[in-house]
Length: 137
Image (cartoon, rainbow, N blue to C red; front, side, top):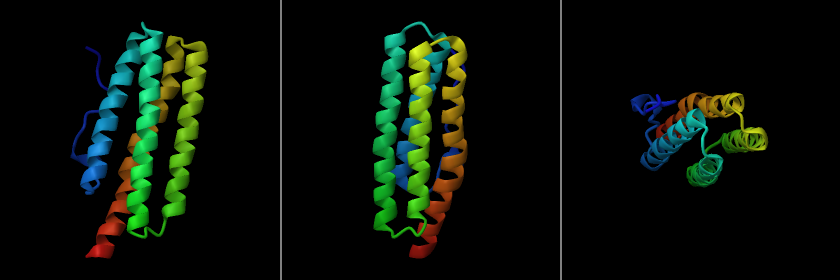
C-alpha cells in the first residue's frame, strides 16, 4: 500500500461538526486518488476518482457557503471566490492529466489538492469558523 498524501488529524478540525466531517471524507477521497495516481494503471478508475472529488468538492463548497450565509459571515464573497478559484484550478489540472495521463502529470493534481487542504482548510476555513463562533459567544 502506498503512503497517503494526508493523515487525518485534529489539526484539520475547524470546530463546525458538519464541515469537519466533510473535510475528513474529502481527505479520504484525496488519499484514494493519490494511491490511484501512484499506481497509474487504470485510466477509467482515475477518471472516476477525479470526477468524484470534483463533485464532492462542489457539494462541500455549497454546504460551506450555506453555513456562511446562515451566519452572516462578513468575508463570504472572498471565501466563495477562493472556492471558485480552487475548482477552476482543480479542473485545469484534471483536464491536463486526462489529456496526457502520464506519471509526471499527477504532480500538479497532488500539489493542487495539498494546497487546498493545507491552505484553505487550515487557514480560511479555520478563520471563518472562529469568527462565526466568536460572533455567537
